[in-house]
Length: 99
Figure 1 (cartoon, one colour):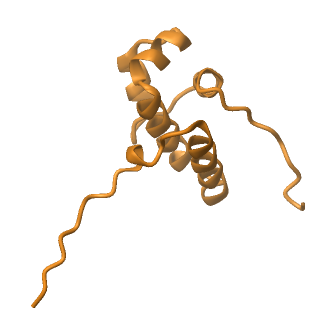
Figure 2 (cartoon, rainbow, N blue to C red):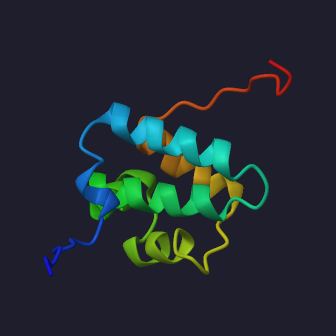
């Protein structure tokens, strides 16, 4: 019997470029239009890929607070999300759902 060696998949290994990060976040918006937990987790992944300390410094938030806000149990304020998105260099735009 042949054994297959599996490697744990790590999204951070795939978030190499700004385009990768943007497409990942966009896919999460498409997948999770209701509760936002997937989007929050994606923002946390992207912030880790860019460097959580740098993101914290650029947003003016404490690193620990940022980790907590973007964690599975986090419940960040909208202003915090917008600060993180702006610091990540991501632009949000509205589009009609009927398009």
